[in-house]
Amino acid sequence: MSINPETPESTALEIAAQVKPSAPPHPPWQFPGPDPDEEASQFLPHRNFLRFCGCSAAIILMAAMLFLILLFTAFRIKVPHVAVAGVTSAGPQTLNRLRNGTATVLADVKVRNPNAAAFRFGGGGATIYYRETVVGEAATPPGRAKARGTVHMSVAVEISGEKLSGVSRLTEDVKSGSLMMSCVTRIPGDVKIITKKHMVVKTICAVKYDYATGQLTAGHCSQYVIS
Image (cartoon, rainbow, N blue to C red; front, side, top):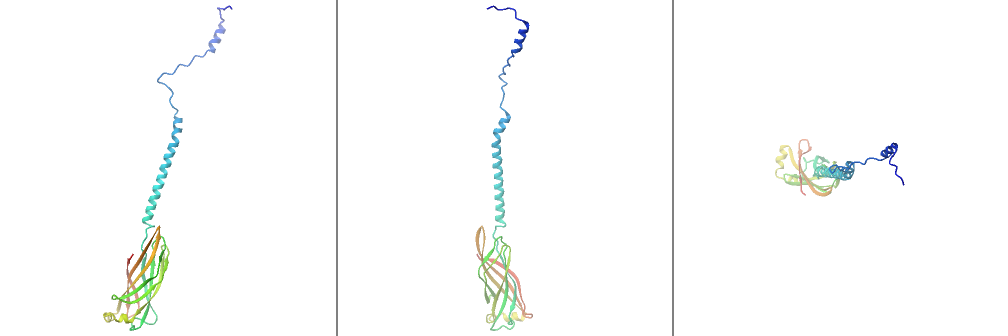
């Protein structure tokens, strides 16, 4: 084999063009770092989980606050208001001429329920006092006052002339022209809002009888809760 020391110039240029210079190595202080997009994609589920937990905690806290507000406002059991709205005479017999017989008066007992649930009450009683002496009694019927509603009951009470005449101050009151009495009602009932509460509402209402006109007038009422 013979080697030709003389290589054509065109062939040398073609060989030089085909040979590519190698890339210089990276300096030791310049290595490519992690991809920021790849890091963001790794932390995205964790951020979504934290947001979900934060929103859930806020919703639970708001629901708890709303429940507490309702518990102390709308869900709080209030005492129904019982009062004698009016008293009228029934029948020809009046207190003017009442001696040993009886006279019937009609007491309009009003029950107003301020609660968000119905007030169911059982049979109670209405008693008329004259100077701490019982002169008439009657039973009140059971019923139901709907939520934030009012119900009226007409209760017929018979006044005993014998008991009325037995009071020592009757003559003095007749001369004054008026007779001051009181009507005491006792209404037992239940209200159920989350829990059930039983109570007996006692109300004392003033009743005035005018001898000149023969009219009965219901006055101020005071209310108490027995249980």
